Image (cartoon, rainbow, N blue to C red; front, side):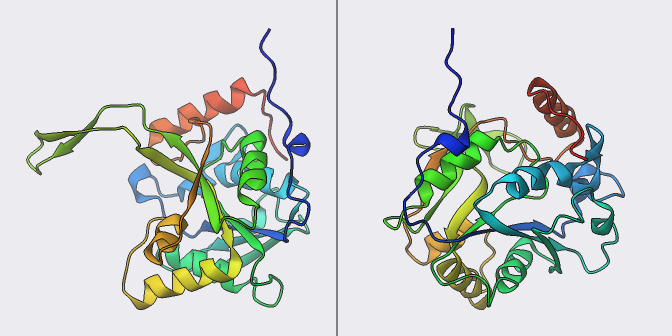
Length: 252
């Protein structure tokens, strides 16, 4: 019989762990989905995708508050099942993901201390397992590290195209990982890293990249490969299967 992984509440935590906050950038339009509704609000097992993304963060006792960053014209956030949760705060974001992350971090000013931890989680990543969240908190919440992210080793063979639709090169996948979320960093250094990216005109696709630009070493924390991001229509089908396999029900 296979042993079950330990519940995240039973994982070791640093004895003097700083306060933990979360930011969920949800201002994107999800144009690659080919639908009018932003992908984070598409229905999934009886609730919006975003509800599933928020659920593990709101349920984690050590997270003090979750800042949800939405588009200026967003009218759907107020209808979420989680809208009345006292841990949830909704603020307005920007045109790009990194703009929304900065807005979420700025919203914590006056609440978060310089060395508090902030988890940044994709709004369209509904299959975060509580055990992975617990592992990230336990591994990354250590003063010896500037931060880390959930990631999964690349399993597929990788091909580079020359732009003509043909294979130009096969890429060795040794040492390559897929970046997942949440990504967890100190509030002050992450805010500085995101500000530096904006100042330098650098487009960063995740928080780890912003930290790497300033020379910070970022830890990879192994996570489940089914922590998938909704990008294409078929991803909804996969996410539904993942949640169903876990016995998930409507979070309302």
